Length: 188
Image (cartoon, rainbow, N blue to C red; front, side, top):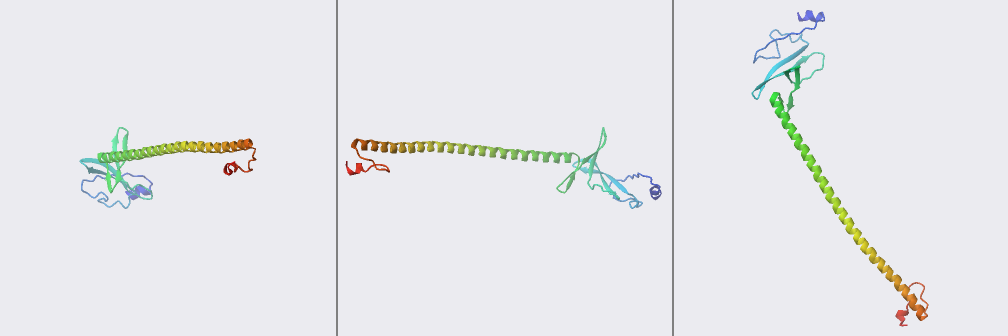
C-alpha cells in the first residue's frame, strides 16, 4: 500500500501506538525502509514528572534537526519548546525551567560582578586623578615660590648693578663694561 500511494504522489500519514518498554525506532512489519519521514513522540519522565517530547527520527532527502524538543498543549494549539541541552543532559519541564533560572541567576551575578569591577576601576581612576591634581597643585606652588625667589635674585642683581653705577658716579669712577666694578675690591 505504501508503494502504491507513493507512485500516485499521494502524501500519507501513518501512526502507530506503542506501549512502554518497546523499542520505538522499529516497527513490527519493517516498513521503516519505505517511510520517508519518521517523527517520534515520546514521554520523558524526569524529576517526578512526565513531559512530552518529539524528534525527527529520519527525514529522507531533507535537512532536519536532531534535537529532542518538548511540546506542550496550550490554548493556542501545540507549542514546541526547546529542551535544555547542556553538560550531557537534556532537561524538559520544570527541570528545564529550574536550570534556566539557575543560569539566569549566574548571569545576573556575573553582570553584577563586572559592574562592581567597573565601579572599582572608576574609583581608582578618580583617586589617581585626584592625586595627579594634588601633585600638579603642589608643583604649581613650588614653581611659583621658585619663580618669585629667582625674580627677587634677579632684581637684587639689577639693584646691585644700579647701586654700583650710582656709587661710581659719586666717586667719579667709570664702571667696567661687563658688570660690577672692582672698586670695592681695590678699597676705593
